[in-house]
Image (cartoon, rainbow, N blue to C red; front, side, top):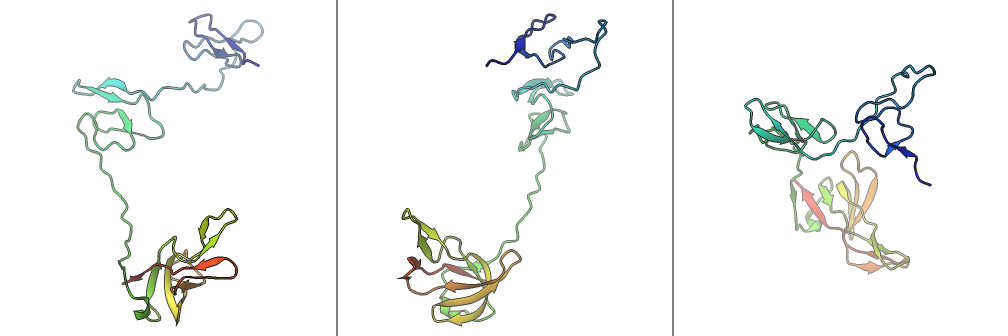
Length: 198
């Protein structure tokens, strides 16, 4: 079933939906109240504009490309007052935008350490995607190990009993660090990869 469309009698714009009361091109009103008087002004119609850059002139009269209007993913250049992309570093007029990246607090770690040299109370970082794996019904390995930052609570022959070391990582976890072996449940015990946090 085709959508009902019509043509504007004033400007000739085609493919206007029948529920649109005002032509987006010329402003012609399709409906009027009884007696021929114009109807109450309808709600504003959003007219789609393209993202094709438009040529503008700045205060010095130089040509520069800008986006047609403000919106999501755009910002205004304070020097030439044209809209540019949100990630633009330099405007065509020469204005340099200032970016303030938020630095992340990096945790300093030591890699390739012997896990038996660590003691209770030390902090470790367990690498995501390491540790024990289970085979799914389709035969794909799925990691079931832990990851994140932990505090060592107890040291065992084949790993550590740890507790979460940061806010989002809480509870007890056994970090397996022994030799690879297969359990009766089908899970393969593999050693987690860890890094010592200084």
